[in-house]
Image (cartoon, rainbow, N blue to C red):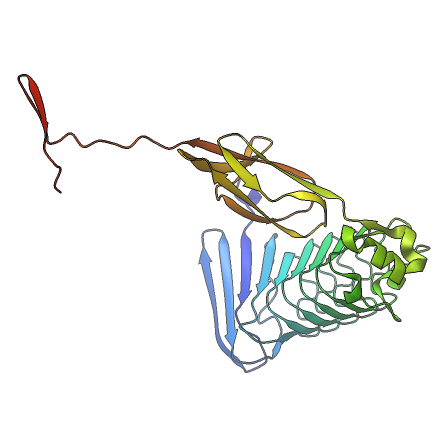
Length: 327
């Protein structure tokens, strides 16, 4: 049984690392979770301070501490226990081979801007399935994601700059590229995202764009117009009765953030949001990232009756007296 328990090791880098510049380094283990916290006071290069953990299912979360930072050369190379990486804050550069051959890495998410991803940064991460850029992307260099043979989806939610021709070479499973931004925000000169994924090499790749930008994209990238389609996810939001809902829609982009709100009628209160009968949220305002068609139902119930305090109720023959309650 113990062998089946996967310890989640969360490495939280609250600042940035350079040799000799870290303010504090400590490890805290609680139950099955180990947290490694590193704090520094400037925009230095992050490098792994100790041997890579060997426990499967490791998640790495990097918090910038307010600085733009770099990931050092081969910083996490061959770290086979890494399963997901989240970059918070702005990244200047992920330098050569930083995450190369992280064979168990499945997802990479950027929540800030990233100026550059260098050669071989994520090369041969054979289990990598999705990459999400929530901020602006400057340059993705040749072979940055080369050999990521399980990569299926890449999502850009901000500006898209220079994407070199071999950035995604060998990504044979890639089918979906979502550009959840205006066509004006996507580079159309040399080394753009469309030319980096030519039809001859990537015949199964479709580019999904906001419906109201479809014509703009097809006009801006005419040689790729047949591969550009409107985002097509649907979010249905329904009330189970005794309340109203807002949000939802059609032609939504994969990786976009959605907000739905449930409002109870008078005399009722909100209970939860459910999907196929399963509770997904107990907050009437529900924010989430949509990755597939969804049908959500808001559930309400009667407000509980107000309780009467009868501690001071006195019954006399022929009459009833209620004295005001005083705490």
